[in-house]
Length: 354
Image (cartoon, rainbow, N blue to C red; front, top):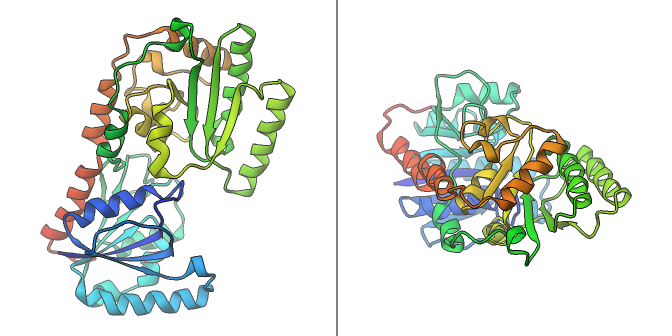
């Protein structure tokens, strides 16, 4: 089988889209791949993967990228058994009727709460849509199938198969390490963590916090500056550290060095960062409603800083939470092997195109 894959970026060092490099490695074990990417950075893929760049990394303009996209499609579609669009409805629209003309099966992966005219039109053009959870695709469609997030369990397990470490707070030794990762944005409610940190500091709790990620949008950058100012005002600089964006290939090691992963996002979607931490076997604390029936009650909180502080303290002192169940849940419901099998199965079995 030969698949044509369209994606934003192929770069194993990217902090956001680097995880798609894992997808390509897994898919390449089951199919030959042609990959068209808007941006191409560093990658380490097998010889049966051919990567073509639209040239963003070289500063190629929009018009030339459109021309290159059409050229690649005309050149590669006749050789492929199907076309897999990753995330961007724009790529579906850019391909227009070419997949139908060449009678190729089409699949779109999309996980975002946004529903705009581009997504509505793309839904009409593709044969199938895969998404991570019911909250990840909010346009009603009979074409949608929920497949889980596609997390490389082997990668995390190989770096994190560790015994349950004794609570640092109980051991009275190293500081209790609280970590979080993801885009720095107001929807992530990092300011609530800072308020909880102040409460814990005033109680004499011995801990440190590392936050991996970066602001992306202009509003994110303004929020980031407010967070830093809040930390300065509360004199928490010795406790909280922003470590910056982290390549996805290194994120498991970041989790490995933590005792507790926290996330207070109110998007209502299954946040992939929480699932990655769970796959690593970490204790977690979240206020995200999507996880209310997934994690034990000890690991779920409201967005009240006082409750957050109390829950953190209890988790630091609690050893009975079976985090192995976390890894089992992620493997069963969000494993990358399961997802790539479903992708291959779609192209191998469906008889309809677009």
